Length: 306
Image (cartoon, rainbow, N blue to C red; front, top):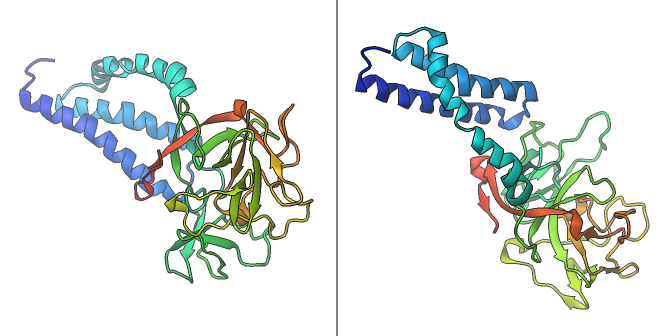
């Protein structure tokens, strides 16, 4: 293009990279309480990555839109090697990103939720949205940052989106880590829980604590006040795994996991069918995907775990 000035180049550079970033942040902020359909997400990506930069180039350099597309095309092709690395190296072997599917790990990790205020300590508390048609007439159980479990009859019925987490697939899981794994009864489902039992241990849940090989485990300071239950409210099945009647003896490649929201978590205590060749209460090592290292969105929920 003729007569290109430094001022035009600087202006175009700032707008081409700044506007899409602002639009993406605005979109994420607006959709915090509503999970957008995939079609909308794709449309937003096309607008921010292609349409907006081309419109900026056409406007700043006073050229046709098709010419602006030609100018922007090399920039669109440049990330292709990066995409290949992400798809075939980063995601399979190094890192993965997930959205929380449930609230079994609330308040540490939060899925789609209603939000209230704890009547005991005043801190925010959370519960899974209840379908008015299928839900129980009882108020939903909620849990706060101090692990107080309460039932509020008048919680605001506004659904907030869940945490987005970063998972390191190369880390060796340690006790008290947050781990992502394939659900043994249905490996197509991905769960997130806290790892409390290591291979070869006998696990008991008693007096609100976890016991391994007869020794009471001391959780990290971040779990002060947590109360793990061996008896689940409204549970009509057999005795839970990890109870005095059914201790969980793990194999050499098996782990025991619990949810931080103990009263609402479908974890190892209640599983009926395990992976082939494994105990029903265990997560096989082959089913572990990785260790949760960060909450990266929303920004007010930013956390570093490991």
